[in-house]
Picture 1: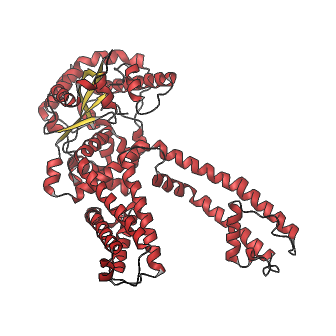
Picture 2 (picture 1 turned 135 degrees about the horizontal axis):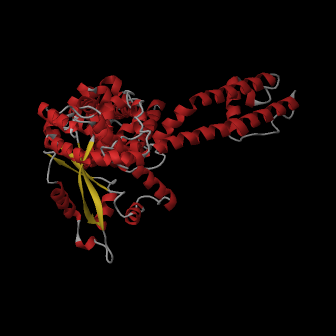
Picture 3 (picture 1 turned 90 degrees about the vertical axis):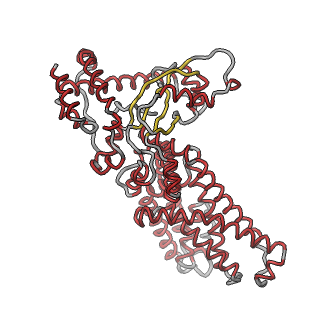
Length: 554
């Protein structure tokens, strides 16, 4: 859900570790102070709007002048509301289908926003699409990302610095859910969508061509020389498939080189990039061995081809996580599970090793009769097989200590199957729940990474053409709109929450917004000009500051 520029969210604590100040006085007691300051607030806003474009910082100014406060500034002042107007409910349905945001780029911050947005909405508003029967007018809000050049490429824009800091662990994934960042990602996704589709097409060419090559190579006569192979029908097809696979890989190799140059080794070294480099290297080695007719009958080539097939299909997850938000994305879930269970898994392996050693020494006089404990390696494999359910209670019959062996097996079965494995399942379920809690932020982060890759590899003229000085976006006013209509529109995307919970959540949002408005009003009335402007955007010009002091004195 998007938030207004005045709504300083509680996520600030999770982003930077500091908590926002709280207002201890009740809302009712503060209402009179707010009403008394409304006239001053209106005059202040008029004066600040006249100089809005000049006062708003660019990305470079924001990062270099206050790098520690950049994320907090984006949270509190990253977006500004321009106004609201009403549209048809059918248009609202389409707007909600676009992640609740509709974006456009502009050269100016202050535009005729209502006329511009009505023209944009009219492009998709076909009479045949309008529903029959009763319709309604619902309210939407026009906003602007209040940072100049936020949609530029590389470090001149907002995404590249955030990704740099995210990949080095300075900030967490919550930053990608900020309204300003989400609007920039949505805008740039629409601008770069065609090139992203071309990238996906290259990937499909690569993976499908290599898959066809593997199926043909399975029955290939490895004794044939390259000219003899090309003379056969299937041999010629395999060579064409191999060439197509290399052609599909070439754009990714170029993008990887540009990304490495941009991020350096430390920022570039992620699990995705390591797997990509392994896939590039494997593809090149396979082509050299196949075309050079080197070691075609070796096991090394078979192993290499098998791993390459897996690497290529795993890469599909990289694109899938940015195309459609989904619960439990495979690799994100796997990564979270591995991180959470690594110590418990170590304990599990130690337990398996301990019982394997115990059984190995217990049946040292029966190793000639029982292959299960012939050496320490087979003992470990036997324990793992028992853990998977392969328990044979008669395996100790005829041994020297059958009773002790059976008792030890029952202890192992209870400790592992009944206790440790169930604890492992509980830890994995908790890890999956953590991944789903950040589903939206992970989805936006995946899109941001894809966009940044393309911008890094794109020529300068294309980056300039796709850049915009200001990003404007449209979203639904869920507080002012008809709850029944908004709920019906959202039901297209996800099941509606129970009406009681939804009503309580809406009431809480209204109270929080009102409390924050009261806090802002009190800050403007009680603080001096220097203290107040130190909390927000850069100071205005001296003339404006004097004007502000005069109004405050009144």
